[in-house]
Image (cartoon, rainbow, N blue to C red; front, side, top):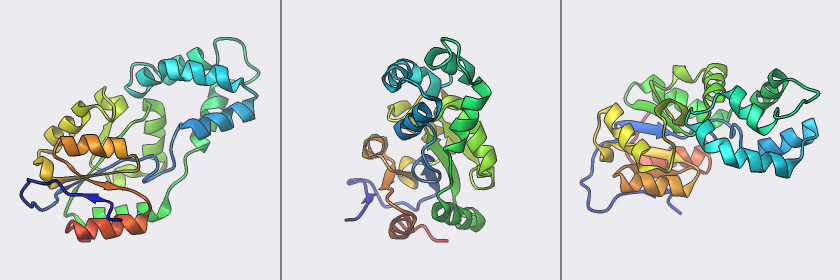
Amino acid sequence: MNQVANLAGQPASAIKVLLFDIGGVVLSNGWDQGARRRACEHFDLDGADFEDRHDFVSGDFEIGKLTLSQYLRRTIFYRERPFSEDAFFDFMKEQSVPLSETLDLLGELSASGRYVLATLNNESRELNDYRIDRFELRDHFSIFLSSCYVGVKKPDQDIYRLAVDLTQHAPNECVFIDDRELNLECANRAGIQSIHFKDAAQLRADLDDLGVSL
């Protein structure tokens, strides 16, 4: 099945902006349910209690209203623990690994100099900053539209409008790559074309279908 969403009624336009989700596309997910479950096992935490507390504050955490320390104090360190906040954050960071084939494709796209490359991702600030540094994402992306920086998260329509405004290109000159269909549907409503990411080989083929050349 073709994973590309072309927008009916819009004139064909050359793609000039590539908007990438990070977790599940470029890197592993940063702090998803699987990572939190592993943390509970590693640190012997009550998983149900942690998930309940996480759900209560995660929205503010991802849009930069809570620092990492505030998040941890509300979810983990509301009582004394036999481990430190630093140890817990180190574990969080260890959950991030690269999706090497996508990073290779990103390297080719950035080396071509033909496209504006930007992130469009939901992530808390400290973890986002770590992932940018650790995996040298500045080598590829010139704009970081991360929820923690812009104060709004996918699938809110405002983040897609920001992407159009800040890249200064028409919506139909942009394509958004994400592994979650809901996020893509909302991008389509903003006039942005989309690719549902499955793997790097499929992404390469779908970009080629849209005329994105390396």
